[in-house]
Amino acid sequence: MRERIENLNIGIIGPLDSCKKISEVIKKYFPKLTAKIYAVSKIEEAYLEIEKSQKECEGLVFTGVGVYSKVIEKVDPSVPYVYTPFLTSSIMKSLWELKEKFPYCKNISIDIVKKSEVKDILEELNLNDINVQAMDYNHLYTEQDYVDFHVTMHEKEEVSVSIIGLGWVYEEVKKKGYPAIRLYSTKSAIKSTINDLLYKIKEAEAKEATMVVQLLSVKNQENISQYKALEIRTLIESNLVGYLKEIQGSIFNLKSDQYIIFSTRGAIENTENLVKLKNTLDYLEKNNIKIFVGTGLGRTAYESEINARKALQIAAKEEKSCIFKVDGNKIEGPLLEEEELTYNLTMDNSEVEEMAELINLNPLYIRKINAIKEKYSKDTFTSEELAQYLNISIRSANRIIKKILDNNCGEVVGLESNNSLGRPKKIIKINFDKN
Image 1 (cartoon, rainbow, N blue to C red):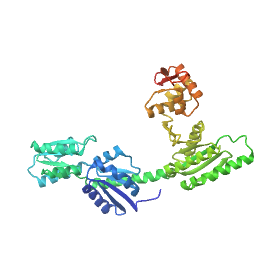
Image 2 (cartoon, rainbow, N blue to C red; image 1 turned 30 degrees about the vertical axis):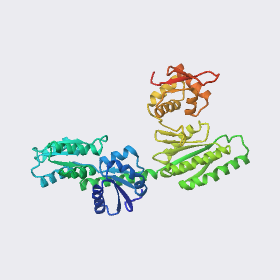
Image 3 (tube, rainbow, N blue to C red; image 1 turned 45 degrees about the vertical axis):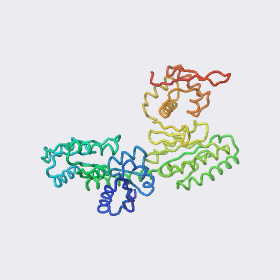
Image 4 (cartoon, one colour; image 1 turned 180 degrees about the vertical axis):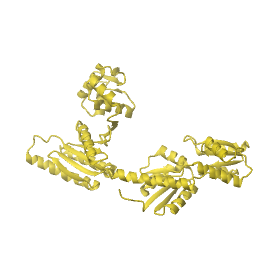
């Protein structure tokens, strides 16, 4: 894997004072990195900086657990990220500053860190005469909650100095005229955090560079003339050119109705490239050419090809052109379709196989139905709904439902009227855990 420590942009998100402290450490100890600051006054606003920062940077540093938690609640950054923690050294540094600036202080309030940790450190420093009021970090608390905590402690005269880990909270408490000390991550903690981020960036690059195999199978190529087969082949290959160019992939014709593509994970999983492939399949289907795609990811080229064949086998059971992906034991598909599901090929494998054998049903359908139940938070279906979710005919759905009912893995819980002269539709509740 190529080294890419040089010319990396590292985004720092959080209160300005903490951002500057991290930026200074990066400049001093990681001179080949470029620190870019995305300052926010309140941690609740930090997620607003993600879209811009992840476009401009290869990795992100959040200035503490508070910023990190508030961001992750709202968005999932597309680049590697870390946050700087408040370690024992951070607390000790703040207590040392307390003794220097307020040598007679015997009562403090502190936030973010655990009271037990502070008490242990005070004991180690032979400062057992200092009383501590603490408010641990909880992602459900707002910054105003922390302000109220410190202010209340001062108003009740239960503390004389506050040690504060959140930038906005610190400024608000200071504005009200109460003595306060800022709790910062230490240089050593910041350096360790940056090293962790660099490792994550390398790991992400290695993952993106992993070889991926795609198998494309053209449906119903057996009983056509040689000329028609050549015409179809030319149309397929000409329409795949744009996609292959985007993924920088290599394509080989395995046989008349099957192709294999080699590319990298980063290129194959890129959303724009996936949309381009889907659009190509849709266009070819309008020309009466159905193509099933199996994408395989693995630690080696061989494993990727094995997984691609598993994905293709599943895709080929669908009614229309589609894309499925197998990564280890996880299967996803049909990709970019409303009925897309994610499920595990080996999840409770013995139980699924046992259930499949008991009711004479393909275990893949059991996994799909379980995934549908989880995704849509429902366990009742009509045959039409089940057919739509599984992308099969209503007749096939009725056969599956019959097997489920006959083996006590489901029950009729109601009827759905369609306001016509036809029969009401049975509503089936499915529960594979009954047996």
